[in-house]
Image 1 (cartoon, rainbow, N blue to C red):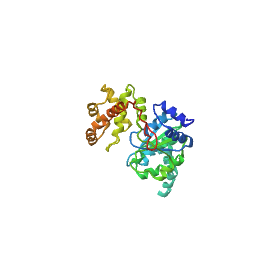
Image 2: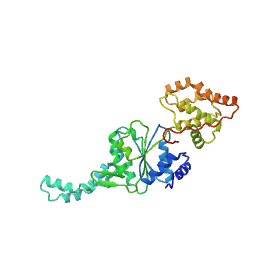
Image 3: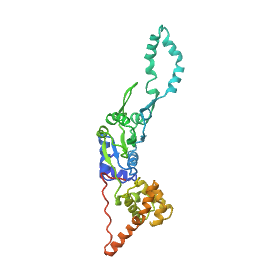
Image 4: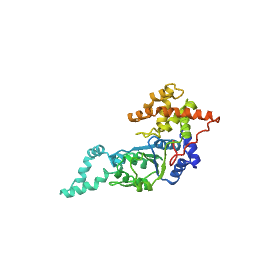
Length: 331
């Protein structure tokens, strides 16, 4: 496990994940205090990836629950294995006949059946779903509850027991405590506000889009073969794109996809033709593409103008200082 926030930074870097002190501190405290982490921020900034790399760094298998509207307890916690119960009923038919021997009334027979029903409503016949698997796992695990903001508020309330006490309740069996407390990450794209009750049980982490310098570092870390000039130009365009009023703001994952696409096309620099031909890699709506095409000249030429301005002043262009993330760090 992690020994300090600095150790978190080092171990996650070994997993090709660049994080700052803020993220590292939250991850470190989560493992020390056994507190779930609610990670919020725009889609594609590395929230799910954070859970994956912590899983890899700690050697804990990751159990993932993907949330969606209509997700219920049966799909998230457990289901009864009715076919197996029926099979056991057939196999034990003679034993049941013996148990029913001597019953003279329906009420008497029902009471005898009732005394035996615990045989069939026990852990033996439960099909564990992600939450129960994480709680009952024989080895320590990491539980990722992904995009919790897409679930219904009722399901969010259902999660409170596991988030606060690391236990779940199966009405027919009772309360089941965690064999090993899992590291828990919840991610949210801010589709809706999480309740105060859920937030109270979690450490909070907000990951925003990275500053330019950090995004270049991420690009260099993730994609081999990208020349530094191209990496800086690419990130510069992405940073300016995010300032446009787009329906879907391109994220880090789009930056990486774009870099891969440019490498595949053997592009060594960005010009209007290259950017126009590859906009579909980074933008997901036709309206955003048309809006960007209208701004293309400004997005591309700005870098040139900045270079010309620096030459005119006779000063080397100072590295642009990375803008701090809005609330947290990112990757």
